[in-house]
Image (cartoon, rainbow, N blue to C red):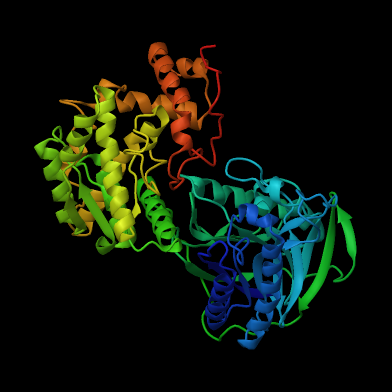
Length: 586
């Protein structure tokens, strides 16, 4: 049986940076070649980044992607890599955008893959299954491909597929079995959510059984607005055995030797199977031999615990949002509470202490322990710590306006927001807002106050998970012999906005261990009132919580983007009308 040395290039492209992404392909193809690879794979829409959203509708952008693909093929050959087959995702089109007046049926923008070899595009494939759920809108942007491309590489028949093709039974993988391929390449832009890595391996095993072939699954890594990609690339043989698996949340070159069956079918011509055409092409009968010596073994990186996985996702999502948008630093308010403490620790891990500014913004209601806890966190993490008392500014407002009650509470939050935005304007920081998912769900925030910010690193983190993450991060620091970043008092004290004397979150909300399970069922699980009550929740509490969630939609619509880690994040995932009179109690 022939052996192919595969190189799965788990890399972090940037949307719109076509030239930079092409340079990344060249650099990592060189690493693959130096490791003796005979076939290199890059992620879905590698040249353009993913998702490109409405950039698809710009014909100039599509033309730039296509031109860059051919230029990349020539550049790889000029780099001395022309003999290395390289599979790369790119944006193509065989007709006008589907939203244009001159659109043609069955033609338009394509989510495509190209195999580059010998300085040219040797074969292309158009994604067949287009996801249209959750964060995906591919039916809006792309036209589905109707052919499976099978290329012969070094005597092995190899099928090309893209992301969602793997997630649905039938289609390309069933056709791959009919075509008798030995290897299926699957390039991905598969966003992270908690425990998705536990789903992937069984899924790849099912598709391997369906295709009767080894699967090489490569996924991108990195952050793109709300989305974060965790990598987790892998190779699974036809029997379902995991041969190699890359780590999560880091760029990685996974190189592994795979034994594959010799191709038997004719190379040229087309045939029809399960409603798809099979298009065959020969790339190369012979490939550069791998270096003499030991067999390449990619290794199997075991998944990490849930808290470590979420922490890495949040750190990577924040880091890439800040760096890819070229912000020099971030600023956030430090209240001494758990949410701002966790956000600050995330920011320091993501960017380094020198790029994080924490501002204590005490009012007359701020407790001494809150001020001390904020200062203690700054000492532990080494971030740039400042104190800006807000009471003189609040008093100036109150001297000119007659306000009381909640209006005064909200005024304090908005003064804090003004100060943080002023520092952003003056010094160039990105303001981080620090409201957790539980607060966003029930509207427990002040518009243009504590909700002010350009990015929210904990937007998709339930309050009960906030505490778990804080305890995990401190314990992880202790295991490494480092100072735990989050003061124990910030973790242990009852949460409070401290906008009025003796105020606690529990004055306005159920306890979080009661609140979060209801919110998770309603928001993430789309359970209605009856389903929540049937799950054992108190009907009166359910009614109260659901009213808060439903009436806070207008606030969430104005909230900053934040890293998605759950199955249903506010924004891209959960889309409800602001003007909406439907209530679960009828």
